[in-house]
Length: 217
Image (cartoon, rainbow, N blue to C red; front, side, top):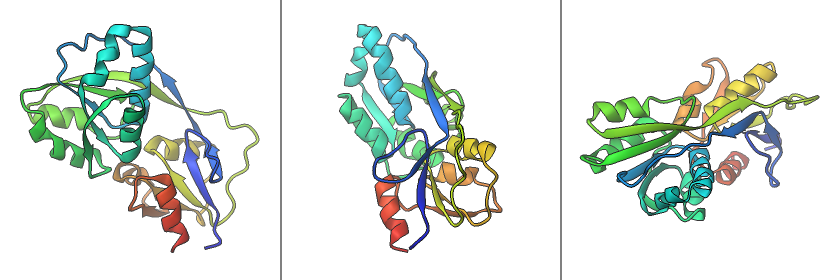
């Protein structure tokens, strides 16, 4: 396949052309975690923010002993790198499927959902409807990056979007070219795409596996 593949998101990668359109702002916070039975993460950014706050408030280091329920291989990997306790990794990249998978495990447990300021799903509300004892904490913000003198991707590009906000920020910075194909790493990102564009839901949540998949087509 001759079409250029570009990852659009929050960081540059050394193995593939990248377009950084967003930035993450970590929000410092303090919580007493002694009565929390489990942690819920749908983003590796939430894990990083928790670790940053725990570095400032040592009593929060207890988070690494609390069972964590996560979406995606990358979130699980980030959790393990910080020494967290992975209890469950979702088989789905969609928050609503994740909710159905974990609801039965969380009954009668005090759960803490660490999340971004803006989320594309209603995971917290859905868990509450299932009777889960849930507390939510906003721990980071997404914001559009200042992209100076950046050229739009060439015609025919395959654009891998790492999050719904990455697609939104890209669309605010560049006019959508009808020759582009948008690639989503998860169902939530896929659902954020405009219905009129060319789009593909990757069978993988991993960037490198998605690249290999596109090159095999």
